[in-house]
Amino acid sequence: MLRIMAGVDDGFTGEARLTPGFSVGFLPQEPQLDPAKDVLGNVSDGIGETKAFVERFNEVCASFGDPDADLEALLAEQADLQDKIDAAGAWDLEPHLRDSDGRAEVAAPRHGLTKLSGGERRASRPVPPAVVPAPTCSC
Image 1 (cartoon, helix red, strand yellow):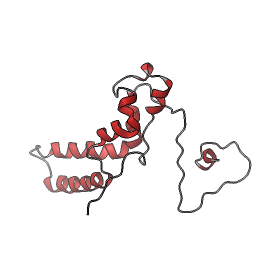
Image 2: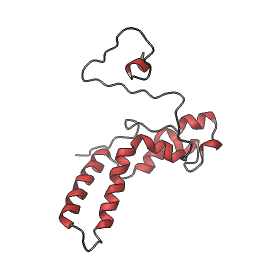
Image 3: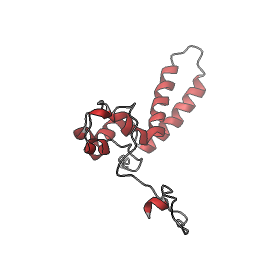
């Protein structure tokens, strides 16, 4: 039923509707991994957008050294990116990736997929955003 609600299985007769305001996620038991990437690369696929914010933030910071840079535009973009990164708790993504599900204990993050057992392959699936620990507020 969850496969149907998540839109993964369409081989059924009838109708399935999701209650407005709810969403469904599906994490398959056997993940589809990219053999061209190492373990950490595959695990990181689940947080691509958040990781892109951090990478772009670093690029913006490096651009401050350009004598022709538009400093006002860079500062505005930097502030926007910092807000997004803060909201996602993404300043230290790699340790979260290594800690989630004990993945660093399961397989070396830089190993290729061909050297992994079935259990290590399952543990190397992309991390959905909900699995990465949410930031805590000490307000």
